[in-house]
Amino acid sequence: MENKPEIIRIKLDETHQQPTMVTKACQIKLSNNKTIIVYNRINGYILDALMKVVFNDAH
Picture 1 (cartoon, one colour):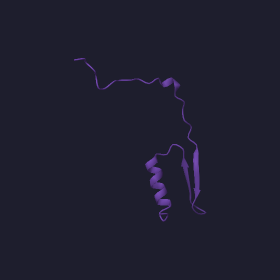
Picture 2 (cartoon, one colour):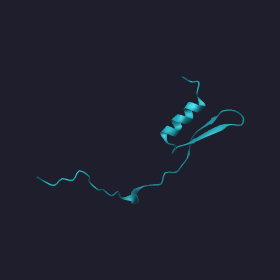
Picture 3 (cartoon, rainbow, N blue to C red):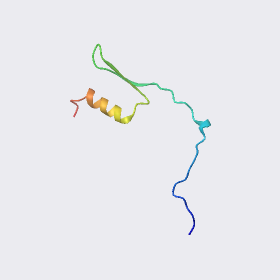
Picture 4 (cartoon, one colour):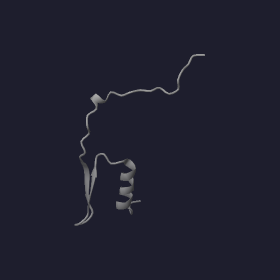
């Protein structure tokens, strides 16, 4: 039998990665005193929870 490992260790070259700038993706004005700003690096589950709270009657 050949010895075939099931886990292969790899190393990515980090010199080609460009830093991602955080920018504003959208801004939602709820009232005169309340504004929500969403940035482009927000996690999907956090955005989903935020949208459910803000638009709780949009079913």
